[in-house]
Image: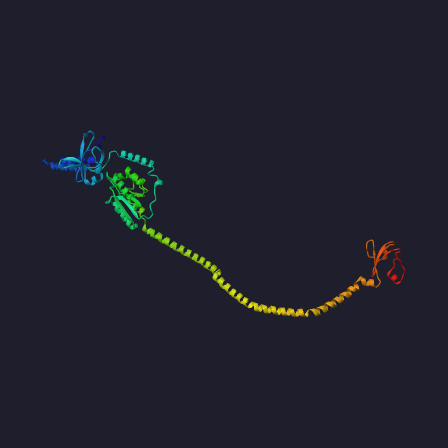
Length: 463
């Protein structure tokens, strides 16, 4: 067991000597003092000199009185020295669970004298584990352990619901944290709050917090959970560094917001939670939607929706107008009406067609019949006259006519060529003479060539 240590300010130690001298000179006539006078003066002297001190010692002879006070004794190793101590009910509610038989503690408080017995007594206002460095080291080791398991990983953090309808709260029903959360929530947005009461400090706090989390996780209507407490000392946060509480927060299947209410210190629950808030009020602001901001956003969205709707309706109206115009031009009823009118005209024309057409065809037939009846006589006369002219012209041009007048057509028999000159028939040439009636074959014995004038003089010739 370590030796006890007592820390007193140097200034207070110095002023003790004049006080003892003043006490010695307070009775110049050597009047005897009562025990009460002595104890009272000693108490005033001690309390004035030891208004604040810190003692590390072992705890023995612990008595938890029904009034709530805790009486115990602080002793050095081997109980070579001891000091009576008391922790009044107000402080015992916070630290009384730590005062246990045989435990080494660091006690902070003041020194006094119990006048009834004339004994020293320390009024302890706060206790902590002996050796703050050991506590810090153990906390660091736990933090490294849980971090290695991934309990503080950022990828595990879940988003908070944007507009939750039900929020769970793990805190003390009589603490300021609950009042702050209710106050902030009520002015932001209507939301249902479900409290799972738990002690937030003391020996039972870790067990209470774990059980409260389990109760809220079992409620399907709870969408997000706030775990926390109001402000306090570093020792007040021990429950939120407890491994059981940290694991319960990390394993909760609903988003958790830590609100320990201590700006400087970061607890392990803060690291395991999905979001951390510096105070319970800030936690309520994170969790509960801002009704004013939502109203503004809703108004803006409503305005934008109205503009978009009107633009869409206008565009669809234009489309409908175009479609109606196209349908109007292609309306089957219009086509039926037009077809009906055409059909009526056709029907009317068809009904009037036989009589008119027959009458027209009869007139044309009569006209053609009259022309046909008048056609033979004048046509034949014109044809006979034309035939007579053509016959006369043909007769005039016919070689037979020339032959009939005594002329003949001479052809060489060798090539049947017509002879037009005496030069064309040499002596001995066989000649075929075509007469008006018959042919003559002659051999040329002499060829005489003469001009046209010579033909007017008759000349004998033989064939």
